[in-house]
Length: 199
Image 1 (cartoon, rainbow, N blue to C red):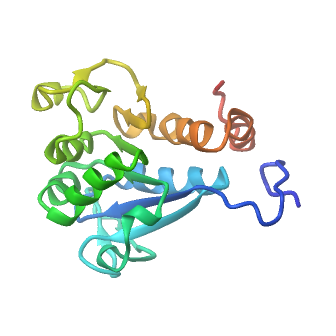
Image 2: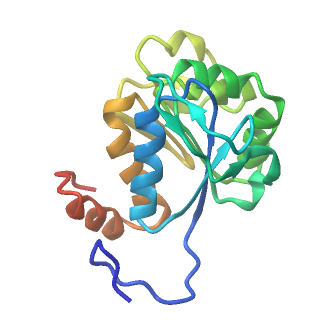
Image 3: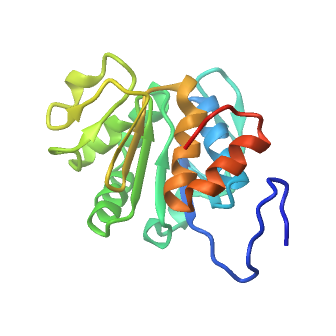
C-alpha cells in the first residue's frame, strides 16, 4: 500500500533496522534528523537511551525521549548502528564498554556502521577504523590516526558511512536510505521533503 512518500511497499517485506544510541550531550539535530529521515525512508528505527529509557538532554538542552534503554537490546539484532555526534554524547558513548563492544561485534558481522560529526571518535575508540576512509567534524582528523580522513560531507567505505556535522545530517541520512534500501527510495524521500538532492 502507498505511504506518504509515494512509494509502494509489499506487505510483509522486512525493512532494514537501525539502532541509534542517545547519550547526554548528543547533538539534537543529528539524532532527530537521522531518526526522522530514516523512518520516512521506510527503515525501522529504535532510539536507545544509554542511561536508561528516560529523557536524554542534548547539547542545546533539548530533551529527547528514547524508545527504550540501551541495556535492554542486543545490537546484533539490528542491521545498522547509527551514531549521532555532539561532543558530550560522543564522549559518553566512547567511554561505555558495551557500546564499544557493540561497534566491534557489528563491524565483525559486516553490519552497517554510521557516524556523524564527532561520533567517528567512538569508532576510533572501538578500534575499527584502521585503513578506512572516513570523515568527521573538521579538526578531529588528528584524533583518528589509523583512518584515512577525507574532507567530504559524507564518505562511504563499504558498510561504513561517516558525515561531517549537523548541516549534513539530511544528506547523511538520505545516503543511508539509498544504501540500505535503494536509490529510488532515497530520491522519493528527498522529493517528499522538498529536499533538492540527487542520489
